[in-house]
Length: 248
Image (cartoon, rainbow, N blue to C red; front, side):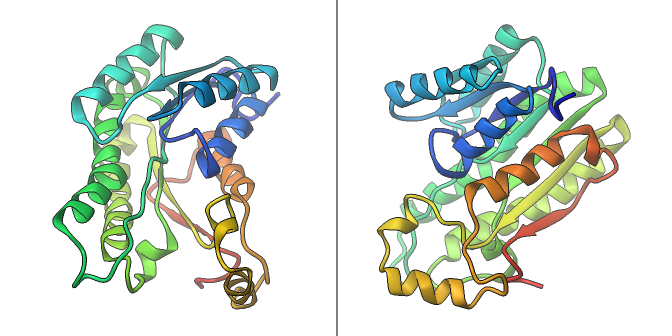
């Protein structure tokens, strides 16, 4: 039996990178996948087709996770299509990196809304069906930057640190109803975004990591599948670093 057989997984921001890899691995493990996207209908449709070909059911929903009303509408739509939500992956995230002295209020608010408020919006919206089922797994995508901080990323670090505190609180609130909440803190993950960086800089980062390589989206996706599955049913309130030993 596959790890997520017959489970319905809702993933925010799944059109590329880590989110897309999570969607693919969930589908391979038998999940019915609902995912959100913001821009390209064409890319979303292509991902739908790909996930169905991997053996699962899938549907993309155009929705801004940072908007409270849209989050509730999204959950209602997913329930209408799939009947329930077993796993929520709060993956939507952006960066607006700059030093604090140059950071605008808009750059701060954009990051907070997309990275942190979206998790509040979606977690609150999925609470009702999960409480009714007395079961669920909520997975929040934090970052090692939320653990250690990083110059030039005060907005991003604050949003990801906030997710860790949010995760611990929700784990305590909902644990008695058999609803688990955990956070994943990826380190240096190599995606299409990092491919555009100076190769020498990227190699320096790799050399600074004990495992001597950057992570892959699949490294994060594998942990997400585990935390969404019944194999992790006694794990809640935890932040697990996927960083090759960058943080110990």
